[in-house]
Image (tube, rainbow, N blue to C red):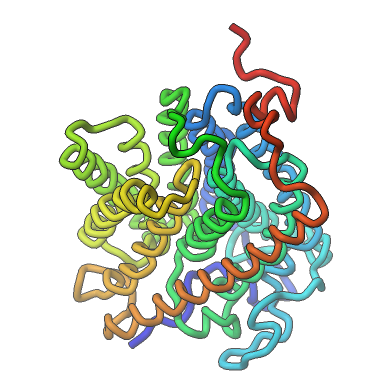
Length: 434
């Protein structure tokens, strides 16, 4: 039997408001406030430092600034129209395919329906809106790593806003907006964003890297990370923040949140060890960058399964992601020759695909999971459909958006600016004054 729906959030959003608002649970509210802060912490400063340490010193501030600017841009866009497009359920009906299956309306633009008393489950809707805002923020910020060190700031901002509008919001709606959403009705399981966030951003990152082309001198000129200390600190921040990402998606301080926290920790640890072991065997030495990358691969892979996998399944998912992502981010990348600067595709897209497919396996109670999956091959097929649709949709729309932005604004810095570094060339600042 397939599991219908992805997680509790959409069903809660769609619940008809009662004449008298339900009581607020202070425990759930406190946890969701905390989880929201943790997810925002993942982008600023977590992702900013994780990426910032991996670029060359002359581009440190450009990456940090991109993460901060995306945070501001998407926060405002989420209130103006993003929340409405992603979660408005007008016209949705289970089993009916129409426009509402793909995207919400603008009926709730500027949060027109929100009041101070609005409640989701047993906590304020304002908290839920902010929680989901942090997911919308980090997704386009992840793409930054794929085109780092060569995209113009103005083009990056315009592309991020358009991508959020035409890629993130529709995919989130199709997976999370409840009965009547395309992938919800298929029965795709995505507890906290394996498809919506990571496959989505990872595929977009690869498309962007291909459209912009390689960095000058790549792969013949060495371009080592300038400060792996920043990268490890950023990875640690992501690890801690991810508990808000995954356990927060239970939208309650309950047993599901507790299990999501446990499996997140276990899968991440297993992936870090898996990447480290694969690198140690292949290259003879383990590296700091490798274990940091393995940590993120594990966090990514367990995200769709965090609400349904058990501890044993989490170890399997983490180990698989660590090893597979290692080879995709190293061997496959070299053989294909694309310049995904910070391995957004190799870690986020590949890790998300591994996690999404294995969610269909380890959600089964027979394998220690906590879902209702009885027919594992059937659920894996459903997961594969979701993955395939997301890859196809994201690839096509991202490519079109990049081409349109390129017609309006030059996408890439010129050769002299790239050689000087984006910090000075675009922002007239230096990350270091030594």
